Length: 357
Image (cartoon, rainbow, N blue to C red; front, side):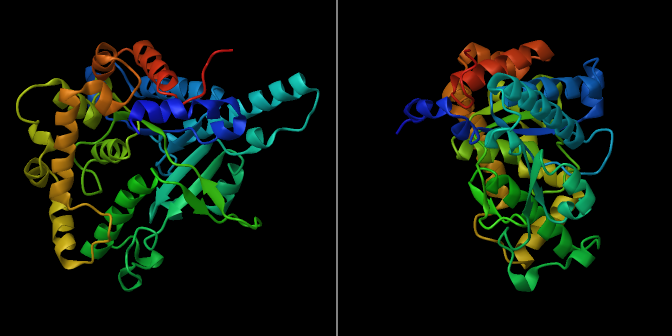
């Protein structure tokens, strides 16, 4: 089945709220201060872009996914998303009560609208009180070391998570990589007090913004790996390169000619990220879980993604946009243009219910 017929055959699902629950759009976003300042923009502009896109997705009965941590810092986008979801849930429940003459919310309205995929050890920062505070907005999906495929004998105890050693760093990188891969698959999580595990639908599209090119904690920049896993899963990937960071590196590489940019090679990263050398050593010393791609092959796969996008931009990115629109999305630094193009693409690619009506 071709990608276009796959989306067309799924069109009937968009008629019911229950089916809409399976439309999950993931955000890959981090604030790169220097990149934004060079464009005359700041953190508030990135927040505006995130919230305008997130609000549209929620109002079309889609859901959001975000792999961010819960540290309450200025440049953490977790809490703006939580507040957005909470506000939208309140508005929609009031609208439903007025329309139906029934104060009871539907199951769809009551269900969470944000999935937070969180790898070890970052989920240890979430207190019970904090999780309880946002339980109606957000479902945390904890990616443990065991779930990432690390053998029991090589699991680092939670009490030792802060220790700086090759084993801990390697296991952190493995669970981070596993999280990005598992987001693209259906998962089940146990909920206290609920008999059956809760199904977590897979990510059906991804939006990329900013991101680190160096100083990252995993095997390769998060934006690169998330673009790669989305492409390999044959899902739409929206790269907003006009706002800097690793997303800009990918966008520029796609729009360029000749050999892929040096930033897409392992050698470039090995020279600029000392932690990567330790991870490469760890890959030789420790058990590498199945499903984890060799680091060098991962960078080669990112280059393959870029080269395919150069040859056929629309079919590779699967955004629902035409060639000119995709090029504009890769380059624009205008918030209104970026929002317009992503909204058009999500609607056209059938990764959200139609906005008609």
